[in-house]
Image (cartoon, rainbow, N blue to C red; front, side):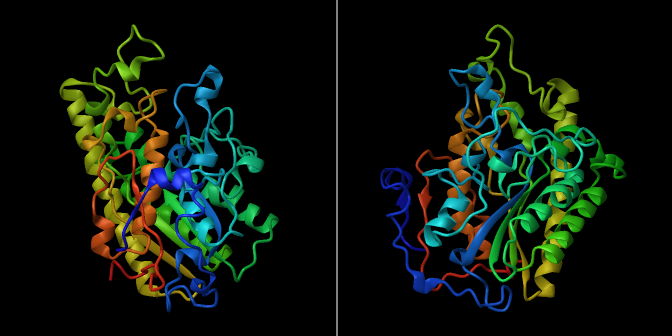
Length: 372
C-alpha cells in the first residue's frame, strides 16, 4: 500500500487537497463484478444499521444537555457528509466531488426503532438530515426490512437516482441483538437467533439487489461488544451524568452485571457474535460466487477490538456508543481496507487519535472475491 497521510494533515487542508484528484481514474462503465469498481466510481453513498451508523451521542457531553443526546449523523463514519468530517462518504466525495447521499447535520433526539417499538412507515426518519442513511438508533437485525422497505428504497426512488450510477452501501448491524438477545446463542430459535439474523440479512440484500442496482454493499462483521463491561468498569469517565452513582451498561442488558451471571451472559454474547459472523461470511461468499454484473457484496472482517482501546473510544454520555474519535478511526480504517486483499482486510485496527489515510492509486480496485 502507498505511504499514509496523517489525519491532522487532512484536517488542516480540509480533506480535499491531500490526495490529488485524478479524473482519469474513474471508469463508470465497468461492470461491478467483472472489473471491480473503484471507490471513486461511486456517485451515491447509502447506509443501513443502528445507532453507530446514526452517529448517536458521538460528540459527547455538550454545553446544552439536550444536544448531548443528539444523533450527529453528518459525522457518522459510515454515512456522514458534513464539510470536513472524517467519514467514508467524504473520502469518496474527495475523488468524485459530485457524490452525494450522505447525512448532513444532526437530529436533536435519536430516531428510535427497537424491535416492535418503531414509528410506522417513513415517519421515523428526518430525510432532510438523514438523506440516504436509513440507520435507526436501537435497531435490531429484524428492523432492517423496515429500514430498506419503508425508507431507503422509497428515498432512492424519490430522488430518482440513476440506475447506471454506482452506489456504495454500508451495512453494519448486530450490536443491539447481542446486548438484548444473547440467550439466543443457546435457544437458537426465534428473534435474535442466528437463523433469524441470517434471514433478515438475506432479505435486505435481495431487496437492495433488485431495487438499487449497480451497488456495492460493504458488509461489516459484528464486533465483540461484551468487551464494553471491562472497558467501562469503575471508570469516572462514565459517571459524568450522575457522578455519585457507579456506571452501569443500561443500554446493554447482557453486559450489565458482574459476577457469575454477568460472566455467563457475556459468554453468550461472544458465542452469538461468532454465530452471526459465520452467517455473514456464508451470505457474502454466496454473493461473491454469483458474480452479478450489477451488484456485489464485499466482506469486512472484525477489526475493532474494544478490549484493547482506551475509555475515550466511547462517548462520555453513556460509555456505550463510539466517540467521535472512534468514528474517525473507523472511517479511515475501513476506507484503507476497501481496496485491500483478504489479509489486509483482516489486519486489526489499533487505537490512535491520528489514523493514517490511504490515497487511491491508479491500479486500485474493490475486490469482490476475497472470500473465494
